[in-house]
Amino acid sequence: MRVHYLQHVPFEGPGSIEPWLRTAGHEVTHTRFFESARLPDPHSVDLLIVLGGPMSANDDSQLPWLAEEKSYIRSCIRLGKSVLGICLGAQLIARAMGARVYRNHVKEIGWLPVQGLRGKPGEGSIFRFPRAFEAFHWHGETFDLPPGAVHIARSEGCEHQAFQLGASVIGLQFHLETTPEAARQMVANCRAELLPSRYVQSETAILAAGPEKYRRINHLMARVLSFLTRPPLTK
Image 1 (cartoon, rainbow, N blue to C red):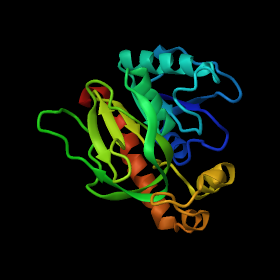
Image 2 (image 1 turned 60 degrees about the horizontal axis):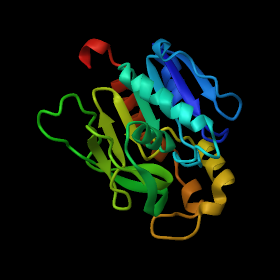
Image 3 (image 1 turned 45 degrees about the vertical axis):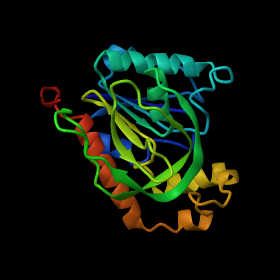
Image 4 (image 1 turned 45 degrees about the horizontal axis):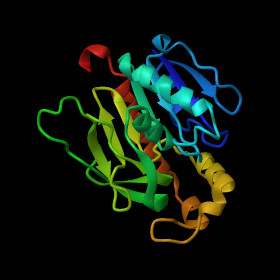
Protein backbone atom coordinates (compact mmCIF):
# COMPACT_ATOMS: atom_id res chain seq x y z
CA MET A 1 0.00 0.00 0.00
CA ARG A 2 1.26 3.50 -0.82
CA VAL A 3 0.74 5.98 1.99
CA HIS A 4 1.30 9.68 1.36
CA TYR A 5 1.31 12.25 4.14
CA LEU A 6 0.91 16.03 3.96
CA GLN A 7 3.07 17.99 6.42
CA HIS A 8 2.48 21.69 7.01
CA VAL A 9 5.30 22.76 9.34
CA PRO A 10 8.66 21.16 10.27
CA PHE A 11 7.73 20.70 13.95
CA GLU A 12 4.52 18.70 13.35
CA GLY A 13 5.65 15.51 11.67
CA PRO A 14 4.15 12.02 11.52
CA GLY A 15 5.49 10.97 14.92
CA SER A 16 4.71 7.32 15.62
CA ILE A 17 2.83 6.93 12.32
CA GLU A 18 5.73 6.52 9.91
CA PRO A 19 7.59 3.82 11.88
CA TRP A 20 4.35 1.84 12.21
CA LEU A 21 3.65 2.09 8.47
CA ARG A 22 7.17 1.07 7.46
CA THR A 23 7.19 -1.85 9.89
CA ALA A 24 3.89 -2.99 8.36
CA GLY A 25 5.53 -2.97 4.93
CA HIS A 26 3.81 0.06 3.42
CA GLU A 27 5.51 2.51 1.06
CA VAL A 28 5.59 5.99 2.60
CA THR A 29 5.97 9.25 0.66
CA HIS A 30 5.28 12.85 1.62
CA THR A 31 4.58 16.42 0.59
CA ARG A 32 6.12 19.02 2.90
CA PHE A 33 4.38 22.28 2.05
CA PHE A 34 7.14 24.34 3.69
CA GLU A 35 9.48 22.90 1.03
CA SER A 36 7.24 22.20 -1.99
CA ALA A 37 3.51 22.06 -2.72
CA ARG A 38 3.88 19.28 -5.30
CA LEU A 39 1.24 16.56 -4.87
CA PRO A 40 1.17 13.06 -6.40
CA ASP A 41 -1.58 11.79 -8.69
CA PRO A 42 -4.42 10.93 -6.27
CA HIS A 43 -4.99 7.67 -8.17
CA SER A 44 -1.53 6.52 -7.05
CA VAL A 45 -2.25 6.93 -3.32
CA ASP A 46 -3.99 4.30 -1.19
CA LEU A 47 -4.00 6.16 2.14
CA LEU A 48 -3.64 9.92 2.52
CA ILE A 49 -2.64 11.30 5.94
CA VAL A 50 -3.08 15.02 6.59
CA LEU A 51 -1.06 16.22 9.57
CA GLY A 52 -1.51 19.19 11.90
CA GLY A 53 -0.21 22.74 11.88
CA PRO A 54 -0.71 26.13 13.53
CA MET A 55 -2.46 27.74 10.55
CA SER A 56 -6.24 27.75 9.98
CA ALA A 57 -8.05 25.70 7.37
CA ASN A 58 -9.52 29.06 6.28
CA ASP A 59 -6.16 30.77 5.59
CA ASP A 60 -6.34 30.47 1.79
CA SER A 61 -5.49 34.14 1.19
CA GLN A 62 -2.27 33.91 3.22
CA LEU A 63 -1.37 30.37 2.09
CA PRO A 64 -2.56 29.83 -1.50
CA TRP A 65 -1.59 26.15 -1.49
CA LEU A 66 -4.31 25.47 1.09
CA ALA A 67 -7.01 25.69 -1.58
CA GLU A 68 -5.17 23.16 -3.73
CA GLU A 69 -4.66 20.91 -0.71
CA LYS A 70 -8.38 20.92 0.10
CA SER A 71 -9.18 20.14 -3.53
CA TYR A 72 -6.70 17.26 -3.42
CA ILE A 73 -8.24 15.88 -0.22
CA ARG A 74 -11.70 16.08 -1.79
CA SER A 75 -10.45 14.23 -4.89
CA CYS A 76 -8.94 11.43 -2.78
CA ILE A 77 -12.19 11.02 -0.84
CA ARG A 78 -14.30 10.98 -4.00
CA LEU A 79 -11.98 8.33 -5.48
CA GLY A 80 -12.67 6.12 -2.46
CA LYS A 81 -9.19 6.44 -0.95
CA SER A 82 -8.59 6.05 2.76
CA VAL A 83 -7.90 9.41 4.43
CA LEU A 84 -6.79 10.28 7.97
CA GLY A 85 -6.76 13.89 9.19
CA ILE A 86 -5.15 14.98 12.46
CA CYS A 87 -6.03 18.32 14.11
CA LEU A 88 -5.63 20.81 11.23
CA GLY A 89 -5.88 17.76 8.96
CA ALA A 90 -9.34 16.91 10.30
CA GLN A 91 -10.39 20.53 9.87
CA LEU A 92 -9.15 20.47 6.27
CA ILE A 93 -11.18 17.32 5.56
CA ALA A 94 -14.26 18.93 7.08
CA ARG A 95 -13.75 22.12 5.06
CA ALA A 96 -13.03 20.19 1.85
CA MET A 97 -16.29 18.30 2.26
CA GLY A 98 -18.43 21.39 2.81
CA ALA A 99 -18.44 21.87 6.59
CA ARG A 100 -17.56 25.02 8.54
CA VAL A 101 -14.27 25.44 10.44
CA TYR A 102 -14.26 28.12 13.14
CA ARG A 103 -12.82 29.14 16.49
CA ASN A 104 -13.77 26.83 19.36
CA HIS A 105 -15.05 28.48 22.54
CA VAL A 106 -11.89 27.31 24.35
CA LYS A 107 -8.44 26.13 23.42
CA GLU A 108 -7.44 22.60 24.40
CA ILE A 109 -3.72 22.09 24.93
CA GLY A 110 -2.12 19.23 26.81
CA TRP A 111 -3.14 15.79 28.06
CA LEU A 112 -6.92 15.85 28.35
CA PRO A 113 -9.73 13.26 28.40
CA VAL A 114 -11.79 12.22 25.37
CA GLN A 115 -15.00 10.19 25.23
CA GLY A 116 -15.50 7.65 22.49
CA LEU A 117 -19.04 7.50 21.10
CA ARG A 118 -20.67 4.20 20.27
CA GLY A 119 -22.60 5.21 17.17
CA LYS A 120 -25.97 3.84 16.12
CA PRO A 121 -26.96 0.36 14.94
CA GLY A 122 -26.75 0.02 11.18
CA GLU A 123 -24.07 2.69 10.72
CA GLY A 124 -21.75 0.17 9.08
CA SER A 125 -18.05 -0.27 9.67
CA ILE A 126 -17.27 2.45 12.20
CA PHE A 127 -14.05 2.78 14.20
CA ARG A 128 -14.77 2.49 17.91
CA PHE A 129 -12.69 4.46 20.38
CA PRO A 130 -12.63 3.46 24.06
CA ARG A 131 -15.44 5.00 26.05
CA ALA A 132 -12.87 7.09 27.94
CA PHE A 133 -9.23 7.75 27.13
CA GLU A 134 -6.63 10.50 27.35
CA ALA A 135 -5.08 12.13 24.29
CA PHE A 136 -2.65 14.91 23.50
CA HIS A 137 -4.34 18.11 22.27
CA TRP A 138 -3.18 21.35 20.73
CA HIS A 139 -6.01 23.19 18.99
CA GLY A 140 -8.10 26.34 19.13
CA GLU A 141 -10.47 25.77 16.21
CA THR A 142 -13.19 23.22 15.61
CA PHE A 143 -15.50 22.13 12.79
CA ASP A 144 -19.04 21.13 12.00
CA LEU A 145 -19.43 17.52 10.96
CA PRO A 146 -19.31 17.09 7.16
CA PRO A 147 -22.60 15.92 5.61
CA GLY A 148 -23.02 12.18 6.17
CA ALA A 149 -20.26 11.93 8.80
CA VAL A 150 -20.61 9.87 11.97
CA HIS A 151 -19.60 11.56 15.24
CA ILE A 152 -17.18 9.16 16.99
CA ALA A 153 -15.56 11.16 19.83
CA ARG A 154 -16.15 14.26 21.94
CA SER A 155 -14.67 16.04 24.96
CA GLU A 156 -15.91 18.45 27.59
CA GLY A 157 -14.13 21.34 25.91
CA CYS A 158 -14.81 20.44 22.27
CA GLU A 159 -17.86 18.53 21.08
CA HIS A 160 -16.52 17.42 17.71
CA GLN A 161 -13.32 15.57 18.55
CA ALA A 162 -13.54 12.93 15.82
CA PHE A 163 -15.70 11.82 12.91
CA GLN A 164 -15.81 9.12 10.28
CA LEU A 165 -17.01 9.67 6.74
CA GLY A 166 -17.91 6.53 4.83
CA ALA A 167 -15.89 3.39 5.46
CA SER A 168 -12.39 4.83 5.42
CA VAL A 169 -12.14 8.57 6.15
CA ILE A 170 -11.38 9.58 9.75
CA GLY A 171 -10.80 13.04 11.20
CA LEU A 172 -9.22 13.44 14.65
CA GLN A 173 -9.06 16.77 16.46
CA PHE A 174 -6.57 15.29 18.95
CA HIS A 175 -3.09 13.83 18.49
CA LEU A 176 -2.39 10.11 18.96
CA GLU A 177 0.87 10.14 16.99
CA THR A 178 2.75 12.35 19.47
CA THR A 179 6.13 11.19 20.76
CA PRO A 180 8.16 12.82 23.56
CA GLU A 181 10.31 14.63 20.97
CA ALA A 182 7.20 15.78 19.09
CA ALA A 183 5.72 17.22 22.30
CA ARG A 184 8.96 19.07 23.01
CA GLN A 185 8.93 20.52 19.48
CA MET A 186 5.32 21.64 19.83
CA VAL A 187 6.08 23.38 23.12
CA ALA A 188 9.25 24.99 21.76
CA ASN A 189 7.49 26.40 18.70
CA CYS A 190 4.06 27.25 20.16
CA ARG A 191 4.93 28.19 23.75
CA ALA A 192 3.14 31.55 23.42
CA GLU A 193 -0.21 29.72 23.34
CA LEU A 194 0.26 28.28 26.83
CA LEU A 195 -1.86 30.87 28.60
CA PRO A 196 -3.38 29.44 31.79
CA SER A 197 -6.99 28.36 31.45
CA ARG A 198 -9.23 25.42 32.27
CA TYR A 199 -8.18 23.33 29.26
CA VAL A 200 -4.63 24.59 28.73
CA GLN A 201 -1.89 22.87 30.70
CA SER A 202 1.47 24.37 31.59
CA GLU A 203 4.68 23.52 29.77
CA THR A 204 5.83 21.64 32.86
CA ALA A 205 2.67 19.54 33.01
CA ILE A 206 2.79 18.74 29.29
CA LEU A 207 6.41 17.64 29.31
CA ALA A 208 6.08 15.70 32.57
CA ALA A 209 4.13 12.94 30.80
CA GLY A 210 5.80 9.57 31.26
CA PRO A 211 6.44 6.91 28.63
CA GLU A 212 3.22 5.05 29.46
CA LYS A 213 1.09 7.97 28.25
CA TYR A 214 2.88 8.00 24.91
CA ARG A 215 2.68 4.22 24.65
CA ARG A 216 -1.09 4.33 25.12
CA ILE A 217 -1.82 7.00 22.53
CA ASN A 218 0.60 5.46 20.01
CA HIS A 219 -1.10 2.09 20.49
CA LEU A 220 -4.47 3.72 19.79
CA MET A 221 -3.01 5.36 16.67
CA ALA A 222 -1.81 1.92 15.58
CA ARG A 223 -5.41 0.69 15.89
CA VAL A 224 -6.63 3.58 13.71
CA LEU A 225 -3.95 2.82 11.10
CA SER A 226 -4.81 -0.89 11.14
CA PHE A 227 -8.45 0.05 10.51
CA LEU A 228 -7.57 2.28 7.57
CA THR A 229 -5.08 -0.13 5.98
CA ARG A 230 -7.20 -3.26 6.29
CA PRO A 231 -7.88 -5.15 3.02
CA PRO A 232 -10.44 -3.38 0.80
CA LEU A 233 -12.83 -6.33 0.76
CA THR A 234 -13.42 -5.88 4.51
CA LYS A 235 -14.21 -2.17 4.29
